[in-house]
Length: 172
Image (tube, rainbow, N blue to C red; front, top):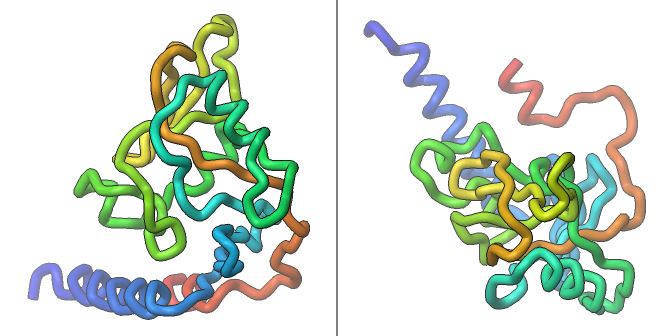
């Protein structure tokens, strides 16, 4: 079998992804049951669903700042690196053009642009965004209309110790 090892690896990975997606907890995400998802690696708390509609950059900033989701009032538009951290670069969704964040945790994802709170250096009428159809960074004029996913600092929960998550142990 010419590509047997490669095919077996994909089958094992597919099974592991299926097992991870079936539960409420993944190595780095935790559903909080209140419309939010915590990233245990970064300590960030994310809005689980998208805000309805699409917004200009200024509207997106205001939308997050006005949010009281789950009783918190410190929501904000994520910076470009925080937003990019949601992209699952191991997913086959990147090749297929589907939403590239984990839809088990973020089910209302669109394969389109999402605003970050980061202005484009050198031209402040532009801001960075992430295209969740392929995970690429891009920038648009702030008058464009993109989707919004707000973030807050969360409880500061970070994975402790030097142990690798179970999935990493199996793959390395």
